[in-house]
Image 1 (spheres, rainbow, N blue to C red):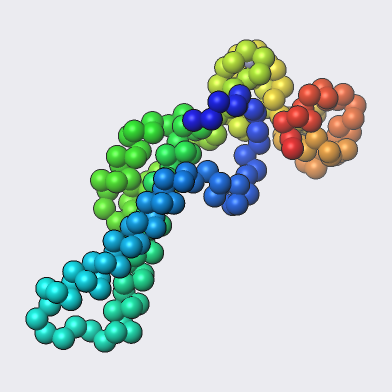
Image 2 (cartoon, helix red, strand yellow):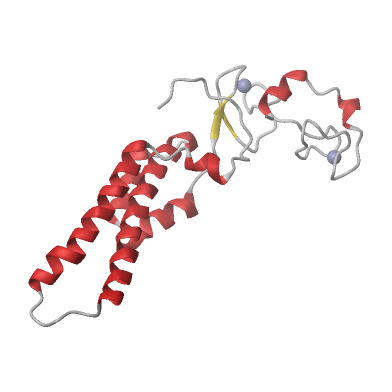
Length: 181
Ligand SMILES: [Zn+2]
Ligand SMILES: [Zn+2]
């Protein structure tokens, strides 16, 4: 885990931001998994085969698709190992589920069941889910919202896109800028 204080960030991470979550060990593991699958396909399997196997083109197709699948699976486990703590989900449980469940079912379950990203309230330290506008413990405003209909707004908006309310009249606290990079 990194030691930087967790900020209340909106859940607007792009795909490339999410890719940065994948730890190095899992990239190395993915390369290794790819190499092991290639080894099995080209060295181990032909040695156990008595009749001439499928044509080379077909073997190439199967070896690459199975190796890529194995590599992707290791990357997925790496991603989940970084993603689950920031959502307050059990890292140990989900890593075990992903490894034990066959055919990637564990990973699919993870993405179906995963919780919203949790931030820490800068004022009182309570856990704040990313879609909250106000801290449930101390009412500190963590994300900008409309003062009329209380739906989410961007700090750069002048008027609420839902109800047309003049957002400047709410006098939003300047600190909200820090949370909406
Ligand atoms: Zn608070
Ligand atoms: Zn509104």
